[in-house]
Image 1 (spheres, rainbow, N blue to C red):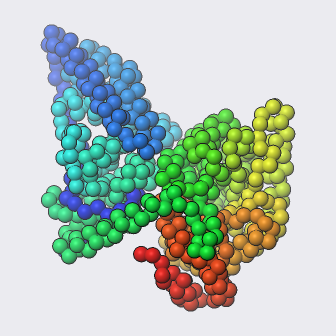
Image 2 (spheres, rainbow, N blue to C red):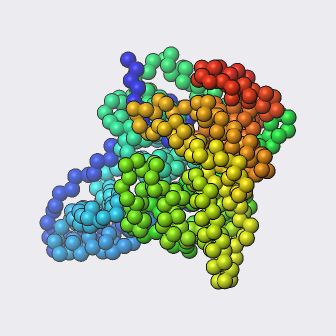
Length: 582
């Protein structure tokens, strides 16, 4: 009987192979009291283990793929620095001397002490650094005990064709497993934006995370299948099912090959209309994906990560450095920096912005509302964005604008910041383009009014749908009502695009709808010419655009807008998509 286990798919692709179950329980350590004449030898043994650990990490660092995030090397460098720190380099040696104990026992005493210190830290981000201590200590301990913990780091291709099942994997683990040509991996822990997940996407390794208990249900020698897009692991599969997934796998590989050829090609419709395709990014680690996608710029650079997991807000200089890293990495392409959208589901850990508890945070003090109340938070960001504009093509994007008064307040503040910078002799682009997110119905309905005061508009469909239909999309009780094809949503999108054309300003879409190929032709029909999405979706969307005629699709627009029911809109959408390339 086939067993289906569900986790979170974080790197698309089909993996078929035998499982390699990675059990990395810590080796058992026992205390041994040493005779005085053995102390010096034990110290040498510990120092040799430290040197071996350093050599292993240096070797791993040399094997990092050239297209991987620079943070992966930084992660390994952090572990190297920890091996140099006296907490691990000398403190265990002192314990060996004072307690006359074996190296393993001294190391674990020091580990327990460090763990206690990290556990008592208030900041959850710093507290999570305890994992790094565990990783480094386990490495030293594995060497001292000659255990199997790091056997997967052996050279050769022992894991070739296997799907690795583990509690968690570190980036060094994955770098080495990729060298051994694994077919995919499944972990019980991990996050979608962890270094390991980002690296898996960069390397194109099918992967699932958060699949708890997976190792309990899988037999060593059975064939399993993982779908890294859907987040599904199949076990107990028969020959027929394996054959079907091999066909899907082959079709995916053909499709990826076709998509790779599109990277350098423009997005242009069959009648010759150029369409702008840009990428959304959240973290600097996303930059390699942007480069791989062939995006023409950044349509949405979310800046919240700079403010989260810390107790003080980032300084103007710190923000300038972060924005400059993005502009320098991507070269001379337009970068749309969205000011902080904190509040609602994105909270601050520190006390530097006082957000009172709200009955409904999504409708409360968030995004531009929070910024206009906390000018000490907002002004440094505006100044940093202005200063970045002196060295690159930058646009400023304002989230959750819903009144003209809010917009005028921001404009006045921006002019004030420009005057300050000028007086201080700091450079900026005096004509910095300013745009607003269209994500509440009021903004879409009044798009023509806002368009008179802005340089561009960007439709954020996730919130626009949520606010228009009055449903919380993460509430399992009502999220079935979340419908991009609702007539009200289509009317608001069309109204916004039309307002932009009338006023001669660009209208982009940066919500999930822009990256869903199911809707690409629908949006072309409504007149959209600027799409911004997750980099992983960009080439698929480009393929559809390059096989579509926007002028012909526009003939469907009035029919779509006149329909009232889901079924008739869906039927027309199917008709528009019926000759999509497979």
